[in-house]
Amino acid sequence: MFDICKIRADFPIFQEEIYGKPLIYLDSGATSQRPRQVVDKMTEYYLRYNSNVHRGVHYLSNICTDANEEARRVVQQFVHAASEKEIVFTRGTTESINLVAYTFGEAFIGEGDEILVTEMEHHANIVPWQMLCERKGAKLKVVPFNEAGELDLAAFERLLTDRVKLVGVAYVSNVLGTVNPVETIIRKAHAVGARVLIDGAQAVQHIAVDVQALDCDFFVFSGHKIYGPTGVGVLYGKEELLEQMPPWQGGGEMIREVRFEKTTYNELPFKFEAGTPDFIGIIGLGEALKYVNAIGLPEIASYEHALLAYAMRQIKEVPGMRIFGEAACKSSVISFAVGDIHHSDMGVLLDKMGIAVRTGQLCAEPVMQHYGVTGMVRASLGMYNTEEEIDILCGGIKRVAKMFGIG
Ligand code: PLP
Image (cartoon, rainbow, N blue to C red; front, side, top):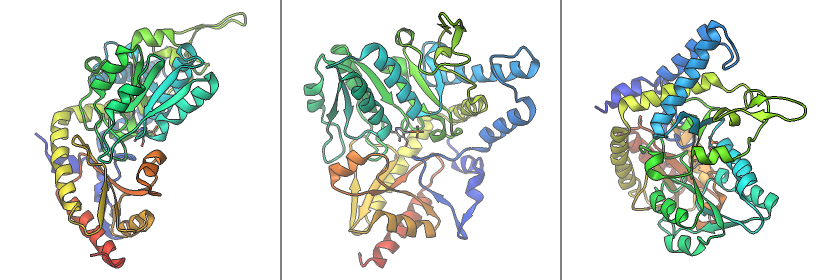
């Protein structure tokens, strides 16, 4: 059962007041809040068990190592990967994509090859590929989207030649909320021999993911957007592919044997985990995923779906409202502008009412260019948001609009 009161009670931050007003947190797309269970678990490990993982023989080190590896199994099950070896811990989505760009790029990308991304990607799924293209003499190509914020699949098919070696696409756009047809994209990309990386940063907290059913080659996400800690993220990669990729960072843990003549590397996934990992963060991420599992992603998805539909209806009532992204399949994010009110003015004035939204380019400058705007205001939802909060948001936007002579 989805019990919103119980869920909100798990998040102590909702007891806080902002300028004497209740906090209305509508910025979960940037980072979610954490439930007490996650913070308690991490505190317990810091205070009672702290000890470096994988290298010790002593009691505490074993406890942390076991918890670290247990979290890996939780992640494996959460995305339904075939093996724990396919789960690499990183600092977040950005680092996961950079890891693939360097190591997959090193092994598989050469001069004249092409990498295909979409116009709606977060900078994290653009810039590492541009850097790779510069290193290797490869070419970055871009799939455009239409006014509703849906990918132009005909253009995708035209761009998908056998020169394309990798397709990078967001499962859910962090600006438009569009849920992209990743199954189709993966199937078509595989038909020309291209590999596919799915940026799941805005998806895993809203949609149940099965990497084997999707058949994606890589899937990446961040802990802090799914009710877990900052500084920890995940790279899922197919084992056969990860095996063929060289390591990225060198150091402790990623080696089997170090000799000045020649060093050999550790097995998966440790080959990609040089140095001391943020093991307490990893343990916290495992706890966050258990928390989400206990509520149930299907339940979360249906609650959020209804909340988004309500929010879209209400927000459209605001005079001068322009919504960016009205895809038929949309999740959790509403980006907008009201008349010619500057996005920062809107954000600052809403903040004074206790309402936290994000403003600016939303780490997606190409999307801003597409619509010819310098920035947007974005309200993004988490499982703890309510219709009352949406009403307060819409009331707040109307007040700001009035101040600027709209409505
Ligand atoms: N990709 C998408 C779609 C995102 O929304 C974000 C963060 O907003 C990222 C990548 C980058 O995530 P992180 O900053 O946690 O690495």
